[in-house]
Every structure is written in C-alpha cells, then in structure tokens.
Image: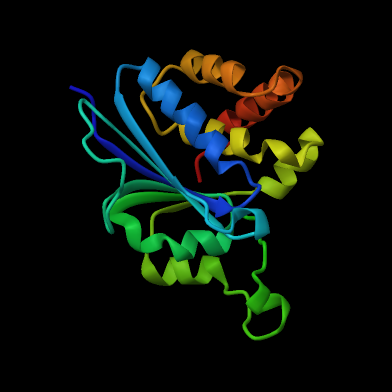
Length: 193
C-alpha cells in the first residue's frame, strides 16, 4: 500500500514551483501512486503568492490539502513559508529556501520583513532551511532553484532517483536539461538540516 502524502509547494510567481509540482507529480505517478495536483496562482505575474497542492496515495479523491494536513510544505520564499504554515501537520516537515522577496508592504516601509527563523523556532516547527542563494551561485543560474529544491526534497521520499531524473528530462526545455540535472544532484547532496 502506498503511503498517503499531502504536499504544499509555495512561493512567489516566477520561482518555478508549478514546474516543480509537475515534475514531482509525474515522478510519483511513475512510482505507482495515484496523484492529484491543483494550483492557485492569482497574481503570480505581479510577484504574488503561488501555491500548488500535490496529493499522492493509492487513490486520491480530492486535489486540495486542508489546514493541518500537509506532510510537507516546500517554500521557495521565506515569508511564503510563514503564510502557509497553518497547513502543516503537527509532525509535518517544512523545507524552505533562505530567499526573501519583500512584498510591497515591506518595500514601502509599512511593515518589516519578519525574522522567519525566530518565528519557526518559537513555534517549534520541524524545519529544514536550504541555503539556496549560496548554492545557486555555485551553479551560475538562479532559474534552477526549483530542481535544486526538488533534489533536496527527493531524499525525504521512498522513490527511485532515476524516476525524478526521467521526469526532469521530459518536462524541462532540451537546452536546460543539463543545468537542471546538475541542480537536482546538488540538492540531493545537501546534508539534511
């Protein structure tokens, strides 16, 4: 029997979390799961919040993940990690990038960008921070944040690495396959935090 997984992938428009979810969904299908994906990307083109729900199990009936039901939240931006935190199960895991995209309320001075690490520590959330800026600079291409995060996340799943690689090769542009595979491999080599 396949373990049920409820996953939220969150970020800001343009960070690639929809492609992340597509690759993840196809990988889980190849591993024998029934998979449902739903995305919400209202003002994504204007730097707005983007969330994708990925559910996988023997049989999935609804693509949505309820509050306090996510096994994992993968956040491509720190504030988005906080915004969606209520969806994480008590024993769930938050994986987040150390990337900040200040919203307009912060850039205009109305609010301060919160100390995300302090908040997570105070709440006692099981969290893994991925130092994405440093890792992306070693690759020389910031556009592969999504596959780097996928590489790191893949270590939490009992799914063959080859299935992820095959899905990446099918879903990214031919000229970007090599850099995306490098990013995925780099993500897999990050030590669990």
